[in-house]
Image (cartoon, rainbow, N blue to C red; front, side, top):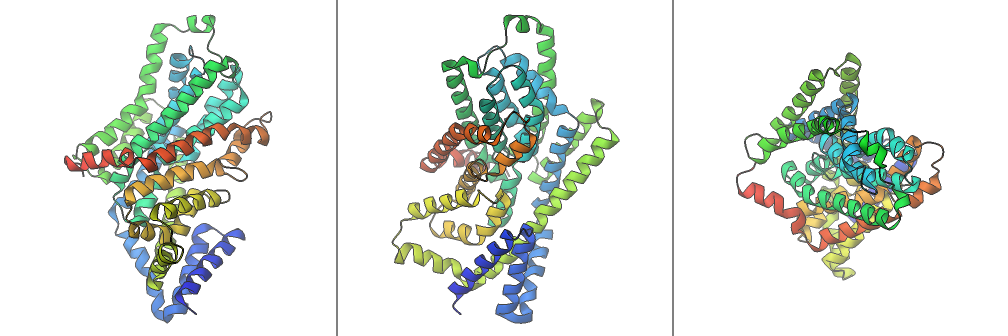
Length: 444
């Protein structure tokens, strides 16, 4: 059997196992182990062992549990609730202001957690009831929450970009910095759409009435402003020394986790239940990611040993005559298709052994491609019929919001995200300027 056929067999077997409902790391790791034993006999058992040792020696891995713990502490201690109250009183007088404030909330939640599910949970439990109570269109607000929560995997500290960095062997710090401007640009495009749409049709997002605005004194607004700024202060306390080059990424993650913990203690919200929930959730998610990374590294080692990447590159460029940009577009389209039934980590570890070396061989920047992958994943999360965020929204939304409302709500936001993806593809410096600037001036 040729190596090309073995590679096709590996992918087919892995997809078949995933369709049977097996866990992602189990399906990928099993196929990698069986294939290595089949190809190289008992010597193939060194591949998974080597993957585990590489993972255990990779120092930046310590950032993963630190950032996840920080996010859960801020979420479970309800410090994140103060953010929405702040946006409510400051943005409410504008048509669509609470929806715009919700996007701002999602950006800050993303900067605290790095997981889209956290933004979705907070948006659905805090923002959605308030928006519905104040007469906002249900399709508008479900689209806002889904779109805003997707920023969690692009705005640093993105856990997905950490996973990409581990698999692609790229600096996590550069990837995070690369996600800053594209993430803020996408949030700005969301806000621009909401503002224009609600100006045209005010009924979609009514502003606070004069009586409601008068009920909130300036002293109350300033108090809420101080409370809402606390998570931002925590984020800056973590990121500023890193950007300035005073601390390493791992040290900054520890600062973030400790600062969030101390903030919850000072505000009297660090109860035993909050601490236990945060630790248990951190342990569960960290272990899940580690298992996936080990499986992906083992699979990638077998794939590299086959030389399958060179064979596929030859197929695309020589036999089919496709240009590097055409291949890149096809790769992004494949992520959209996979996103209808897989989550972001599954998509990455399944195709990473093929796509990442192929992107390098085609001459593209892997930091830039990490941002493109993440934006495409965001779009896939919200694309019917089986987008990941669609079902999370349905599980958390009240009964009066049906699947038809949820499906139709994301259409304009997906269009905005496609525009953002195209802009970042056409202008790579949007993603690459900040990491180049920081690292050229002494950041580490």
